Length: 435
Image 1 (cartoon, one colour):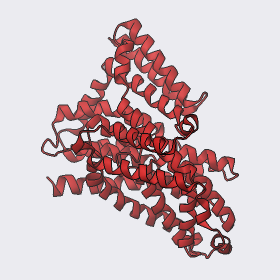
Image 2 (cartoon, helix red, strand yellow):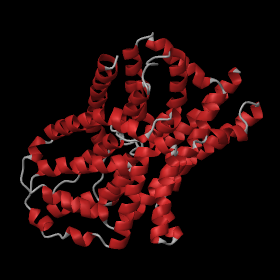
Image 3 (cartoon, rainbow, N blue to C red):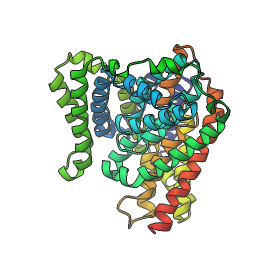
Image 4 (tube, rainbow, N blue to C red):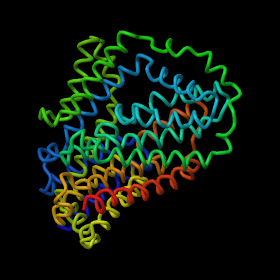
């Protein structure tokens, strides 16, 4: 058994090294690690290919697939450029208001349209508007990253880790809105205040080239009005279905794919053109990570981690929430939120079953601690989430590089502060008020 655990940990460690150090693309590293885990498990007799496939959460895969198609086709209409210009005009020439509006719009959009797609479409527009205004776009890019990650934490569909948590813990869309969104909203406004204090000297200035934004006609940004209206119809139906999916007993993946199917039927686009909006590398990365962590589970390593967490908590609900929230947040800063959540969920399941903490609650607050940890911890470094890396790559290509060290100097203290602040809110809501 020791040989199995050692071999499994070596494969897992090398895979993470490949993902973090990026000698090869991270999806290729994950696929290679998953294949290596299955081959080793099959040879040692503890992890067969059929078992490995069972570890892939197709609820998560289907939900991501449907939302990528929906949001991708909406993006084709020019909707995000329209939104950005409209937001810039609302600022009325004030850096302070511009940053605040961009943060709020990005956070709200990320909550319902997934944060990776949101930053993919909004980042180039943000840089373009900053260039028109002749201002440094980097403070806005960093604020965009943070607001996308924070906003995405508020809902089931806003951030890939929430999709995985919701599937693993059987948490519906409305429960995320009810239990975690209030905490996220408070954290968002507090973080915005902290961020604006850090840049107060810049933000108090007036824009010299604001007239260029005034001259822009945002209505002309909508280049395909028929697709725009069809996308809004399909998206509205999808969100409505998400609010009642637990009543209708529909799995989240089925809701997302229903919305995507409605839009595809309404628009009847070239299917290959529609599917180009699917981030296949992300889908394969998810599937590979599920298989990789399945190997850890079959080797008995997940049980050991869960037991160690139980021992560390010492029967204290407050300590348990702290360990999960802060621990997952720091882990996310190092490995990224998707690898972190897929790795930690099985251990959390063992931990919950062993401790029986919060048994009276309809949903165990430990899951909310995990969601907040990986969601807010993602702001600590540029490797914290896929959304961060997307912004970094786009800004590099557009001539405004966002160095890792420069981002971390701002991102890490803000992320650590938001983790600690959310911990206080979590304890207040679920331990002090709800008992």
